[in-house]
Image 1 (spheres, helix red, strand yellow):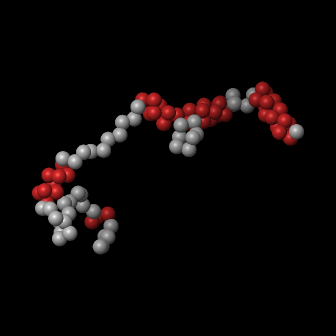
Image 2 (cartoon, rainbow, N blue to C red; image 1 turned 180 degrees about the vertical axis):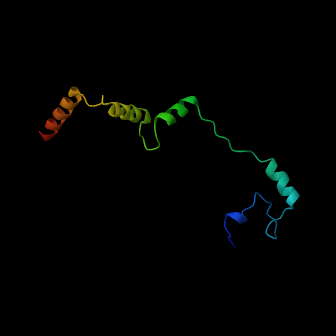
Image 3 (cartoon, helix red, strand yellow; image 1 turned 90 degrees about the horizontal axis):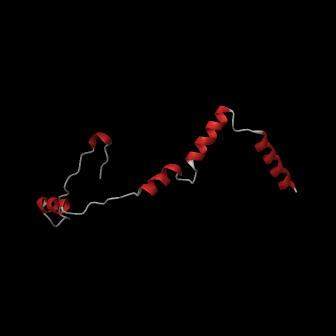
Length: 92
């Protein structure tokens, strides 16, 4: 086998040789009648896929938080107080 790079790549071609027991015409007729794989995604699955990344990150929440940080509305006295309370609780 010899690999010569992308410029040597050709489209789909029938495989002919002594190891195949069928003629090229028979192979073409057989491949055209074979079923084609198909994937249908429900609207609910599509919506879930858009809001959750492949690693479980909720992209909609991340986008909202980034916008709040950029506009300066993320850090509030209430959030800071809650964070300090959680820190003290964790320290015992």
